[in-house]
Length: 367
Image 1 (spheres, rainbow, N blue to C red):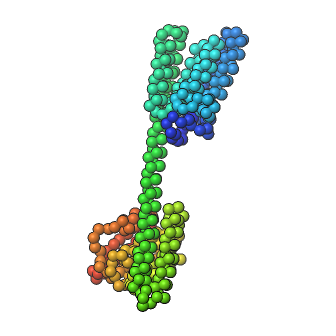
Image 2: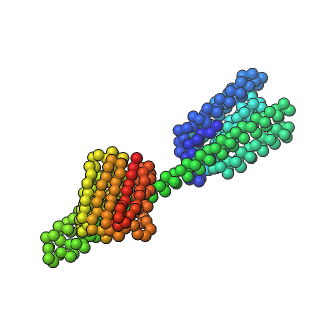
Image 3: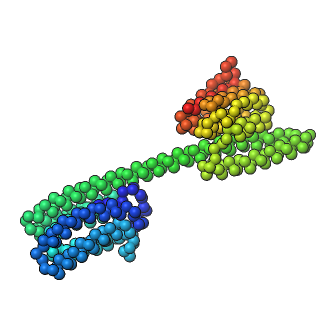
């Protein structure tokens, strides 16, 4: 009896847009076959029977529209809109009573479903309780024939089913909302990590080249001009990198990062020994190793005080070795971000001292 299974959320007081799953609510109209059968055998006169038949058809149409496009009624906002639709449905039920009698109560669960799935959970449960109490008063007050006690049983059972389904939808909505929040949090972390990786590397190289240009400005103006041209180019590349990273459009290329590593190390006065064939690394691994190479070289330039750096990679591994100060202090954001990125790809990151206890070796392995 529900037309809202997808867990979509709407602002409080707003009306749902046209619901493409309205047909799910319409399926439950099959139970109108009971009052329709009673109508066929009804002893009522022809006018009452015709009126009841039209009321049953109208009930089916209005019930479907109440889910498919509730905005058809001029009443805006909840629960007023739902109350207006229920008022129309109750009127149609009353028109059918002279001909179908107690079987008109078969349509009561549809009213409960309308309240349950058009309102937030708490108001929906209150509405179900009110409707159940009203039906109980009608039955227990003797307003129906003594043999119609089954009406209360039927309505209680159907209300329990509707309430259970409403709880299930509410739970799905909560799970969907939580999943959306977690996905958004992960995306933010990934974007922050990507921006850090892009800017951390590029700004380090820019600072080094700018410092070099300042030192040689008087003695070697041509070289200073060349370094400043590199700074301008790096700044433009960094801006493009940030834009594409935020837009999730770009993963760094391993061949480009290898060349960038040589440039960065050379600008820092560190002898660079970079060897390996980028094309030998498969596509998914290539992006991970490119990020790892960028972060590793940035750390060498910033923190190692090394004179030499060696970069080697295979189709599944990357090794960056320097002869600097060694592994000192806690890990920074860059290395933590690198571990997270590699772990997402199913790989591992190992940071250790060099073979003779000097320098640092960073090993990245991806499956």
